[in-house]
Image (cartoon, rainbow, N blue to C red):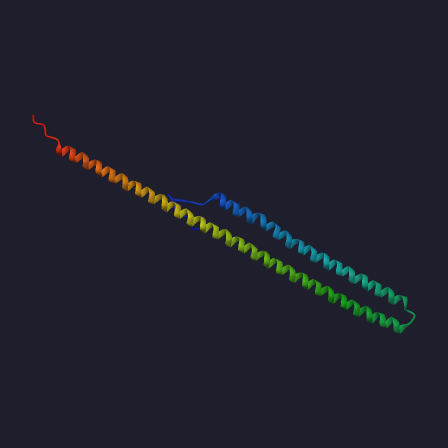
Length: 174
């Protein structure tokens, strides 16, 4: 709970300012989450494409191997190359996957930092609003105190004047 100033048992908060800040947070968060989700979708698409690319390459290598089945040495060499190529493709896919996951994690941390910064900013603004409300309340109370002191002085002077008037009147004799 915010340490808001209290006046006559009520908490004072600038509702419009608070709602503005909440709107800023509400409008920015979905965009950040959509961006992360888009990156995740992109990662999945890249992995699928890499898998398809690997299958295409493997298929091509196997086709090539079948074309030269006549010569056992060439077939063996083709299989070795296909296996090596398959391993290279798998390695490249794994590296791409790792890079994508690293980028997603970086973006997630960045989004969290931005959210935390917005939260800190909103809290700072709330504190500034509270301080301003306290200052305003202090000025109002000081003004009321001054006015009451002036009124008491006027009342005291009026009563003194009445008392002097009563003391200076001659008393009636019956």
